[in-house]
Structure formats: C-alpha cells, structure tokens
Image (cartoon, rainbow, N blue to C red):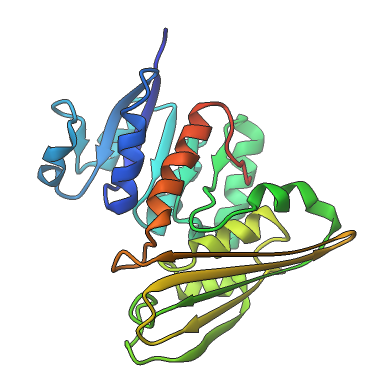
Length: 255
C-alpha cells in the first residue's frame, strides 16, 4: 500500500498533537517536520533527517499533504505554491484576512483540484454553517479571553474589538483562528461580526457563535481552560481529530 506523504510546519502544542496523530496511521509517512531548531524535536520519535529548519528543502520532498501549525505567515508564504501539487491544512486561518491571499488560494485550488482545509479549532458546528450556505443571514462570534491571552495588558477589561472578522483576524492573528474558520465556513470574512472581550484573570477561553438564517437560529457555546498561552486545552484534541478526518477522506474544505 502506497503511503500518504505528509509534512508539518511547527511543533508547538498543536503541532505535537498533530504529529502524534500522524504517527498512529500506518498509511502515513511523515516526510518532513519544519522547526527553527530541529534539536528541539529530538524527543518526538522522528527518523533521522526528518526534522529540518529549511522550508525549501522540506518542500522538495514531495509531500501529498502539508499541515501548518505555526504562524499565519507560513500560510501566506507557502500555501499557494503547495496547492499546485498537494493539499494544505492551515491551523492559522487568520492568514485569510488578506483578501489577495484568499483569492489566490481559491484560484489555485480551482485550477489544480487540490484541497485547502481549515480545522474547526476550539469551536463546533462548521459543518452546519457550510451546509446552510446561501440561507444564512448573519453570523456573530464572540470570544472572551484574558488580556494576557490576547497579547494585551493583564488588567485589560471589556470589549477590545467589534467589527468584521477580517479586521479581527488582522488585529489578533494568533488569537482568533476560530473566527477565521467560522467566517470562511459561513458568510465570509466581511459579513461575519466578530466581538472580542478581555476579562482580567479569566482562565478559560470562551466562544459564542450566533447564527440566523432562513428557517434556522442557532447559538453554539464552547469553553476550554487555557493552557497558559493562546491555546485552550480542547484545541490539541480537536486538532488531532481534524487530521484524522482529513486522512480518512473527510475534513471541512473551506476553499
């Protein structure tokens, strides 16, 4: 059986969860893991030479699926090129706040037939948003985190942003990847309303999605304890599940 060749950018909290999931599948061959310091991944059970600090050399190894779990710039730099010949899964969905990049990814996938995936991250219900499509009237997502988790002063309190998801993703590129996923699954970056609230000392990340459409009205709430940075405790588990679905032929294709 021919194995699916998979490459990974980033081995932080989410990247490690993704790699552990990949290593469970006998039908997967991990052909590269890109990290600025390959020595820091020595504990991950990788074959010699798999870890590299050179993205260009890594991409020359012919992966069928490339997964990004690092920063939005990686999506901007490599997704359009990768999608010419392979699938791409972006955990940093805020990269799509750049309309030129979004348009480029749509053009390449339409031409190449490859797939671009956005995992659901810390929230649920993206399949329903995608299915509802044309009958959606409004989608609002509200996130409550501590100021520290948002990259702000710890004492920051109250609404720190309210407006289109595209602008929220630009202002908080490491904090609102769920806003990008919700927007792309539903009514788009410019029609999705994002609200971000800072709550001093809050130890959980909370997300509330409100959806209105023809014949439907939903409210979805999700919360997860913070792991100390920008990631909630549920997100690594959801990341592994998203990758398992992609490997099984599923997964939400946003563009």
